[in-house]
Length: 408
Image (cartoon, rainbow, N blue to C red):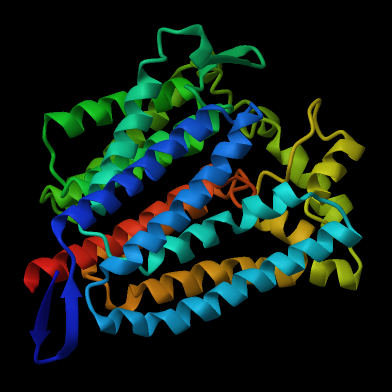
């Protein structure tokens, strides 16, 4: 250990590379444990692995706290403390809903988990953190692709056989591989080499075979960003996008789409895969009939699930399949605004205002892609999905930190 002095900074200590390497290995373990947890979602052991991730994040925070760049970093401690009280307050609100309405402690933990990880990791600088993200993304992409010839990786969804990889649902597979490709590209310094092209091809195949239509759009957005990063002008890419869209429209008009992965657009029911009926039940029988207190505080953490079961929107019981409807129905306006405020305040403490232009774009794209995903699915109830928002936020911060370190 040695002391370094800068005219604009108070004296601080720099740890040896050995300490940094040790802490990096902890981070790689945490990030690579998460895909394994997702693969075992349907099994009891996943709950214990889930806790192991949170405990690992806490241990990383303890070790990483000793690797701060300077004493100036500690000024953020008060902000993180305030944020911690905000998360505790939100958890207490959810706890009251469980006691007086419905839900379980598991539901509560799933909703606050992303904020806990953000608290534990958000204020720590890690020079080698990008490697952990790359390893995790590679694990998600390659391991799922290897399941293509294996029966375990497929599921019968109605009359259609679709690819789900090691995930429980096909939409989870499509969303996760899209986000994995995105974070790998950014963490790998936006290199368009044979590795990225191979991973992009693998991702496109898996997303196509998953028949998760909204994630086709996500993959298109990611590749649009990749081409912009490669130096293509925005106008050129817009013209290409218009041509591709026109060609796709002509193809759908001339070809019976129901023969291709049952991409059936003959009516609203088939195109939305039954979501229109779920939304109708939630709006007509849940939100529209809510009392003032239910509008404000919600009807319980699994109210949308119970309503779907009562009215039999489909053969199976479902949640709202829309994030805003889910939060409004279950937690009311108080829960809805609290949830999004915690994300916003978390990004603010991470320093989004002082991030590099590149990091702001990364964070904005990540938020945009999750908002698109939230149109047809619930994110907040599944750490599997909100985990990617945490990863993107930390990636944006760590990219800026890396630039600062290089500049100094």
